[in-house]
Length: 263
Image (tube, helix red, strand yellow):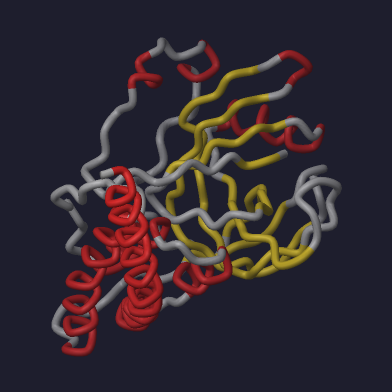
């Protein structure tokens, strides 16, 4: 099994890529009824699900393409396609993706298969999407793929909380500055942003854009209180802006030097 993350698109309302216009296979059409929308799950003390330890952090609402080639994950994929169930994507703390030695972090994101393509040799290409954050309660016996008991994180918040509102205003003002600078490094123009007005969804939307190590994204995933998540996001953005602003200045100086040399 490997993951093939792609660069996130600028935050905007969800759209349907052209690749999704193909007819669904018979197996896709016979799936179980869809799960409740993200954030509207019924109260559950715990749940037992398949797990995908990866070297990437998945946030709710984001896509994650996967290439499935290990036998245990082929089995898991076939079972998920039959049941329409969820699985858990969770960052590896140490160990390898392949071979069963991975030790994961405690917090991950449930995901569903939205697209699949079966390849020669029983391999699969999957298009998956993150749903809800969870905490790993304990690992269970393999089936033969990793399996675990999870509980969902509480995304409830009080919109009247002054600390939360202040943290949200700071993060909403800071992220566009970071994005403009990051795009300027590749001579791109920032577009008008359509950002969520709900704090947890806001963090989930912008976090994949941050040019930080996966461990930094993991911190944003696993913090539970909305105000604390936003505070951590603002702290990471401040550090990134200081670093990238210097890179942008150097980039512009090099461009102008090249133009001067040509003229």
